[in-house]
Image (tube, rainbow, N blue to C red):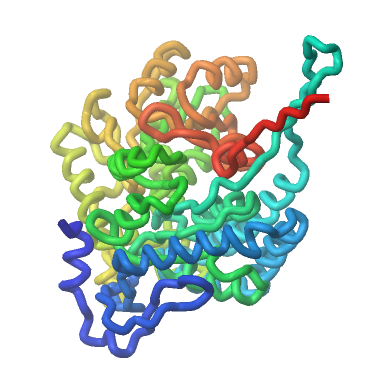
Length: 505
């Protein structure tokens, strides 16, 4: 059965589609002709215009991509020395940097987010992912043991790492290039081949990366991209294909559950970074201005479309009202506009469908008894932007701890503020969730900060910061927020199989 998004997209074919470019799948080193393919519109979230038509990959194309990847593993790529493979990844990062403006433009067109987010965070981090993991693979050690034997001569046991094979990479739409390369960097550095399924909302940088692969000489079939939707479409064909050896996915928990069921057929490995309902905790002794800035960024960066974003904010009671008013002032000072306008600080949501979901939560919050501190609707936009997917940054107070708006992930620019009185109380509040991805703690009492970090059940805790990442460190969630850890040597655990060799001496 086709997903609702897929069905709606097919109905929204714009009259000016003939004037837009067509994005096709990239298989075995070449873009596949769109002849006979079903096409769907990619609309700008900024103004609703059709900016591209996307060719949906059918089961036969997905199979062709998987077979191309398997041939690459059996051919030059599978035999390539680590040094040469890693040199190619460095060349890829350099080529992305050389074409920096192209990647920024593609990502802005896909997501509508302001240029400063692309130029300072998403595109540079995407390029860095290739270099960082190439260097990790070249320098990581494996175990070896000298083993006693009854004859006294002994044995030597040592470990080797081998690529897992063909990796299905299913990508989200909120930071498409950064999160795609977060998976591609270690997957390719370890010697795997990939079949990438970008989100149907954000296909442009995945296609552009195919050009980079060819420019630097990555062998055919190592990198394949198939475009389309999820259930009953390309995503399902990738995750259920028996030639895919492992699947890595970032996205919502419900989709991760469906992928896990598909991966169970053939007992294939999975790595998931899923949803979150992350807590921010502000103590009265925090650097007040830094905490306001940090919570504002964690709640509203990328229009709140960040898995690590803060939707629950707990503020120690003595500073609660002051903090609420300061955060309100910052939220009301955002500047809406086109992403290429350097004055813009705030973009739209990714799609009309997601806009309606977020606005539904805005209405639900009021029904559940929230006091709206600011926002709660759609901003007044000029006529040329009126068809964009805009929503206001929104702050609530007064909700019960069991309210759906407090417990369910909105994935939009919103947060609920609640006062607390003690360390034990706020630990209980922060942990009272099905999710466990991240938290951010603001205090100048570092002994307390360390205690709190140990007690809160999340994969990553930031103290007096947010979104500060060292790519060598473990990253992932607990509870409903994911399975596994990636980053540094931890990525190698997923993207390789560790084998033991025992040599009798």
